[in-house]
Image (cartoon, rainbow, N blue to C red; front, side):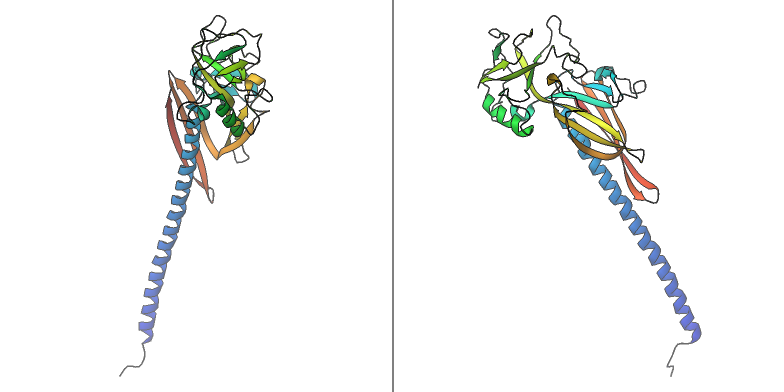
Length: 299
C-alpha cells in the first residue's frame, strides 16, 4: 500500500501548478489592464460629452449674429464666426457671443419677457413690451448673476437687441454689441419702468426699434488655456456685460468646463454652427486615451 507520492509525481504536480499560476496571472493582468482602459475611455467620453452639451446649450440661445472668434494674444485679430477658415485662422481660438435670457423667458407658463415691442409708440426713453412680467425677470436675472445685474439700474443693466437690425447706420454683423470695441450702436441697456415696459438707460442714444427684441444679461466666452503638459483647459467666461464696457478676460466669472483637451474647433456655415472637441485621459506609463465629439447647432 502506497503512503506517499514519488518525487517524479511531486515535480509533475508542481510543474502543472506553475503553468496554471502563470496563465492565471496573465489573465488577471489582462483583465485589470482592460478595466483601466475601459474606465479611462468611459471617463473621457462622459466628460467630453457633458462639456460639449453645455456649450451647445449656451450657444443655442446666442443672439443672432453675435458669435465671433478672437485671438487671445491679439485683441485686434477677430472675425465673425460665419467668416472663419479653420486652417487660415488657426490663432482665433476664443469663441465669444452674447446669450439672450432664455432662463427667464421660459421660466413661467407664459414668457416673462414677451419679445414683442410696441415700436409704434416707442421713444428714445422707453418702449412697451405687452404681456411681460418684468418683476419676475428681474428676480431671475439677479439670482443668476449673483446680484451683479438687475433691472433697477442700480448695478450693471441687462440690454435689448432688436431683430432684425436693418436701420440706417446699423452694422448687421454682430460687431456693434461691444464685443470687439466700444461700438454698442445696436444693443441698448435697459431698466424696468413697470411690469410691461422698459426704460432705455441712455436716452440720448439714437435707436432702431423693431417689433421683436431679445433680452440679454451676459456674454459668454470659451477660452482654451494651455497647460504645462501641452494640452489645454477649456474655460467658460460669463456674467460680464460688453455693453457696459466689460471684457471676458477682466470682468467675467470663470469656470473650467473640461481639462486636458487637444482640439477645440468651431465654424459656421449658413445657419449651422459646428463644434469639435477632443479630450485626453492619462492612464499612466506615457499612455493615454483620447476621444472626440462633434455637434451641430441649427439656428
